Structures are given as C-alpha cells and as structure tokens.
Length: 480
Image (cartoon, rainbow, N blue to C red; front, side, top):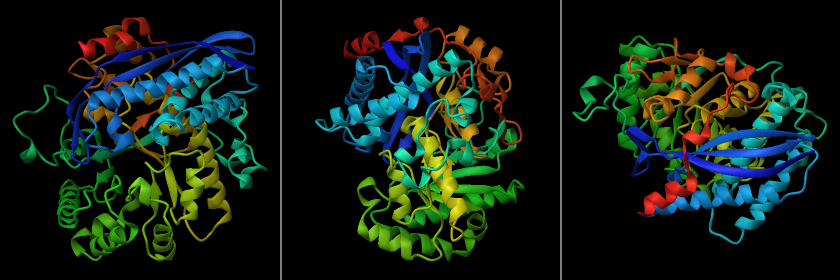
C-alpha cells in the first residue's frame, strides 16, 4: 500500500546563459521547483523528491500571457496535485495511486482553463517524487522496479492490445548505461564564431554549433524549424555545409517545428519543397524524424489524418506538445503519426506505456517504423535531469535531446554543497569544469549513465532542500 502524508515545495531561480526561444518569445529565466513528498510504502515511511521547471511558454504557447501569470498558473497546478495526493486513500501500488491522482486532477482541471499538458504536469511532479520514495523504500532501482513490475503498471488499462503483456515483455532486457547526446540547434543559436555577438555569456562553455562539435564530439542534432520556407532552407543548408566542413560526414538529425505550420497540407508542401532542394540532400539522408509540425488544435483533425495516412513517402512524424492525454500516443498513430516523445513532465508511467505500445507495434506491423523519442525541456540536475535519464535508459533511447547544459552554466545556480554532492555521487555524468561548476561530461558525443541507472531513481544522493527558498516566500518576493 502507498499513501502521501505531506508535501512541500522549494524553488531555485536559474538565469539562462543565452535566451531560450518559443516562437517569438525569448525566455531568460526558468525557476526550478522542487517537490518533497513524505510517503508511506507498505508501512515504511520514506521521502521522495522531484523537480520541474516553470516555463509556461511551452505549456500555453500564448505569447500575450505575461510570465508572472504563467508562473502562478503552473504553481496552482502543482499545488492542486500535491493537495489531492494527500487526500487520497492508500492505494495498492504506485501505478494505482498515479492513475487515481490523474483522474482526480483531470476532474479538478475541467472547471479551469488549464490545458491538459499543464495540469498533467502537476500529476507528474507528484508521480516522480512518489517513484523516488518507492524505489528507496523497496531498495530497488527504477529499471528493476519496471522490469519486475513492482510499480503495478497495467498496460491494458490504457491500450487493450497490450493487456497480455508486462513491461518486461516489451522493453529492452537491460537499461542502457550510456546514451548519445542529440544537440539542439535553436533558431537563435549561433552556428559559428562569426555569429557570436559582443554580449557573449560570462563563461568558457561552448556556445556555437561549431564549438560543440569540436569540444564535445557531438554527431546527433535536433534542428529547430521556423516554418518560413526560405529561412529554413538557408539555415538547413548552412548547417549541412558547416558539418561537412567540420568533417562530420556520418550523423543523425531530427527537426522540430514546434507547432509552426498551419495545417498538414501546408507542412507537406513545404517539406516536399525542402526534399527537392539538392542543397539539402545530405541533411535529409541523415534525418530520423520530424517533431510536432502542427499546432495542438490541428494535430488530430480529419484533414491531418487524410494528409498523413495518404502521404506515401512522408518522413516519420511524431507528436510532442499534442501528447497531452494518457492515450494521445494511440490517437497519434491512428492519425498517421509514427510515434511520440518522452519527457518526464508528461508522465513517467505514461512514458513506459508509450514505449511498450510502440515496441509492440514495431513487432507486429512490418509496414512502418514506430518511434519513441527522448526529448528535453531544459532539464538540469541535480534531480530533474537524472530522473529523466533513468527513464530514458530504461526504455532504451540510444540518443536523447539535451539542451539544459547549453542554456544554463552547469549547476552554478545551486548551493556549493549541492554541486559537490552531484560531483561525488555522479562523477561519470558530471565533471568539474574549468569555470569551477559541475557540467555534463560529454565525451565523443555520449554521456555515461552508470550511476544514474544504479541509483534508486536517477539520483544517488539526497539534496538538502532546506538550503533552497520556500516556494511561498519566493512568490511573495516577486510581488514586492
């Protein structure tokens, strides 16, 4: 049996070293929220911790919304989920607890204007802390708990076709102990040194695509599209030429349109124009998939389904922002998409179920390849990134988009004690940079996940949250 007795929130302000763009919105700070959950697991008291980011621009995609309103909306969602978790009766398994909390949060949100992607994030924040507490109480790693199904994951409760299976039947036999970094090339990110302006960040970390290739050895890339045909063609061609000049002849890339195209037909027209452009041949030869080209309200329309299901030579197309309900991946497949993305903010158990669904389809449908990607929402340590990587390793994602190490100067925003704890416990994933901050240790384009996989749920240590600001005090300070 599992129950929640107490919850508490803390926050750390993090300023970006370069702006993070959502369409026309430039984000220069992302507060990170920590949730502490005191739980009872089969009669044993245990504490779990999770971490998320206040980045309303991704959840709303409403440029006119002021950031303070967005922050408070997100906090309201987090608090609602935490309060509901404390009110629930004890459930037999973590999965049962999560599903009950999910249904209660959905009913609560029905009387609000919070989008599903946002209210579900509140559920996920509680879910991650509960998974952490459960793994610590049971003395198991996340990968072990999934494969032995100690969480009680009921695949058939979401997709009937998965009813005969347990997660271990469909997931890789062992978690990955390393994965490849897929480096994000944002619309505003400089490609080479001649594009760097005078207001360079006050650190010596890489900044340009060229520098990341030279210093970190990356050969997997996620390229942002603007949905402006000429602008995108020119930028894609320049990226291809730059990689060729750097001697990166064998690489993999994905493109992310961030809901930029008005319709499936509009996306197809632009994509076919790009595909017929000989200057883009090399890049297209190395393409893995296209991520979320359409706005949420256009992703699952009859017109979209007709376009995607009849497009014989289409690239693999996956959803991301449209993955806002528990069964959105199945809906996407029915509309001609090839899969979906995993992010812990969208749900840990949901991600496991999606991985199982797509693995099952790959086994039973020879006509196409189904994709579960691993994407990033500016995740950073000391908790958020590691818990996300624990799930990534378990589902077997051999390349993962990471950009938190690019947009932030390592863990500089955290107390020195937290920085040292990360280096001591996860010296394979982090290193002490010459700027004297812990940063990801990317070697030949890969990161080691050994200590992440061997920890209960990603983190091998307990961060001292009392060193951080309490959420209420932080909000009051913003009102002053």
